[in-house]
Length: 365
Ligand code: KG4
Ligand code: ZN
Image (cartoon, rainbow, N blue to C red; front, side, top):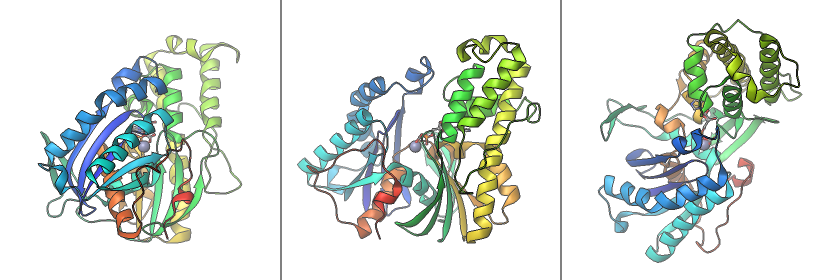
């Protein structure tokens, strides 16, 4: 069964074809990072306009790269929540139109749940998948249920326990900022480019993780997260370091930091952010005893997070290649395949988008 996935929830326009819920036939991602870099973050209206410009070419290329025509596509999966409304509208409208005029079944997919399914994409055999000029190291087998998933992206931070496809429980989530958002905001304060995750982890390599001490938030539910206090603690420490008071604007701080201070702040922030994620995942691991532990979402690309989690959990930690951790449509197509096994397709005229929607609302068992 071949599913075309379409993703446009934030600043990536993506389309992919996945076969039988595991084999990538194509993966096209048009990133808007260069456009949003100049503003230090995603501008919703600009994002939506850019999606409109490229959505059709991106979808056509996904078919072309897979050497398929519309007759070969058995279903379309599209992200309908959560995300930027204007951006979601572009992807869903494209999917609805194609579904209607080509008479192909349509499956709406939850973006955060889809991130988890990047881990179900495998390459049987040596695990190497050639994508254009690139060679990706893919897992050669899928995770086993029950699965503990740490889902960490620019918009979400959740620990989820999956008993099976569509049968899961959210153990905890962030009460304020998502961890990726904290990376992005701290990067902006210390003068590193957007997106903050990769630039902080690069700067952190040359910094001292113990140069500054930041607090970890203690939550009533041990599996919940909070990152806004950490971000404020970094801000206060920088103000102190450069000798200004707390009313001094955060936008004026970066130019007062030298490279050593910048790297030390990046490294000390990353240490506490990563330890917070790891501590809670380790607790949940020993309480729920899952067969697989996976990390999903853009922050799963963080090498320190992977390294420390591996050290502290006695089973293999599973994660996708970096290109599949950040937003893409293969994960959408992959989840669409499992929806298609259990759920009816949706009338293309009925599909709506939701800027915020809990994964709990999409449970399909
Ligand atoms: O999953 P994603 O591509 O989009 C959302 O659904 O939000 O995640 C984007 C987030 C951004 O906040 C970005 O800074 C973060 O993932 N990110 C990283 C790394 N690469 C991307 N965070 C930490 N370390 C990285 N290496
Ligand atoms: Zn995402």
